[in-house]
Image (cartoon, rainbow, N blue to C red; front, side, top):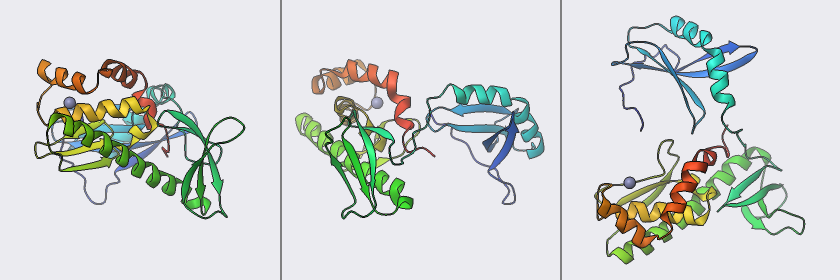
Length: 250
Ligand SMILES: [Zn+2]
């Protein structure tokens, strides 16, 4: 769950500090929180961010000191995370669970498309300048994610006889989907990397909330009716969910 807190930051204070430890530079986000009694560090495994929480009246120099003393801990925590896979030519990313190799086609017409390749991996091709590759590919993946999630959500909604108002996709660090009582569904666009069955499960889950706004037994029975394989998808997310945050990360 995301921590909700008021931010206390004077305009002249940087939102992040840099700490050098063992020749490595760590960027650390600083959060002043009213309820913080001491300095604490955590590594958000989904976004790979290092976050330092400190009392409102604490000072940044002390914060930097504190972070430096815990440099070994930060390095170990980050080291345990799977490596990031930036979007660049030759990188391999899963699309709907199938690994594709990124192929840059600067001179080609079009924007982003997939191609079968005779040797090995299917390709995800991106036209245009290299500097726009990440944005173009991210935009395309978000559109594909939205289309898939919208289709699955509407199919399940029809099965349950409920109405969806809107489907949106975002980059959510802490959850894969959410649902409002007014019928707005929101999902992480990163589900496009997961196998189709996982994306379908998330849609079944959120649509079921339109009937049961809770996680009761009744709710889970409803999800299972829409998606009899939900346990497999849940297990997949537990085992591989964090990996979906590797791709395109800075
Ligand atoms: Zn839920």
